[in-house]
Image 1 (tube, each protein chain N blue to C red):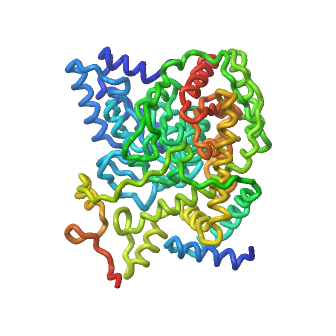
Image 2 (cartoon, each protein chain N blue to C red):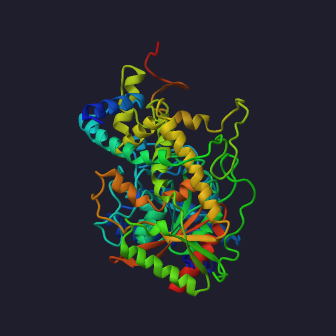
Image 3 (cartoon, chains in turn cyan, yellow):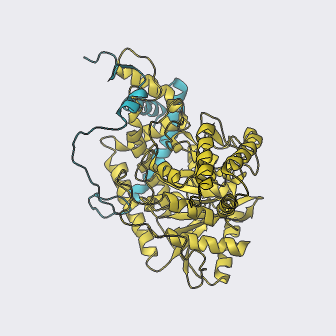
Length: 96
Length: 473
């Protein structure tokens, strides 16, 4: 990949990941990500059998519990760790 | 080697020493050694003193206490302790005080453990050297100019230097076993799902496991038994009872079938390291084990599979650090600006790279080629291991291809850094357990023997480890 394209890719990934980068970080990551992507390319050479991914590596089936709201014993404690709040609400800038 | 935990438990039971005095001794050792080692991010003296006092009180009342009761330990600073700052070595969580205990902490509390402090690590457990930390690097007790390995380097160094008899670490791709190898201590990565991840700050959820680091095999087994088992709060934990690893641990290796994967001695593995490990295998053979060479051809791609999947999982797991709900925050006029500034400043250099790489692997257009293909190859690797264990009890090889390296020597060369994990990541990819036991020295530095078993067969890891420890003196 050309150097300019590498930097463009890093900027695109930083935007998708919601992270502000400095110029020197962009340069560093352009090199590192290019190297790593090349390295991991070797996985495409392995033949695999297509099977649906429904279990963990130790064979536990993924389970989803019923979506039922319930009281949490940690509600107040969790409110305590919120950086900005008003009363029992999280305070954020205007969204709409 | 006789169990240090059992020795201390005996002394406490016979009232040769109180838990409070043992804790004082522990803190005086830490005070003396910590300036040169930097094994801890924070010291939890208030919590530890209260725990020690309670144990002394209960003992005075004639209670029969568990073997870990009143014994100090270190906890990797990625495992939540209620009311104790838990930073994951990140600027993002530098002031985060979790409002609840991780399940492993609940279990250690039930066993009367005393938490002396939170040990150093690579930020969010992403590293092989404990250099990427807000607290600065941990130094290897064998030689302060060297890394202790990572990411559980603080736990390994604290145990190796005699600050604590045991510590908890986490292992996503070798983060317990590589530091155990570099520092000359015992470390176990349990079967995926054996130990609850509830309350453990997530890095790559389909790989992460908590495990013990200790001076002896029996000590590691005692801690493992205290923390292992199904937890309704973590749906990926294995169901059913966990069988004891202490029963039969000293039955020896006579007749056990040991496989030696030739790929674990391939080019890139230090010759002196390979030679020490081969000597260790020779001793197991002399003790009656049936040793044969085998091949695990997919070993070569395991690191690439691991890099894709763990980065993908990290990018989703770390999306929660948004500057709004908890952790550090940066001001901004819009939500987008808060996210970008908070995450840009709050995450360190390695973490940001991994998030971006994971984002790349999951991006539309690349997800099939990288993420889905890696998942499929992961299954092939797991099958390769399962197949090997149809005819073998354990596999053995080096834990790391090298000995501890100088601080600063790899921080700007990620692929060279990741190569330190080339012999540990296949085990996480396959979801099987592995124990590392010190076995001699190469270049005057510790070498670790890695003992790998089939899923749920930690008992075989401990049995072979205990025998090796015995014959090695």
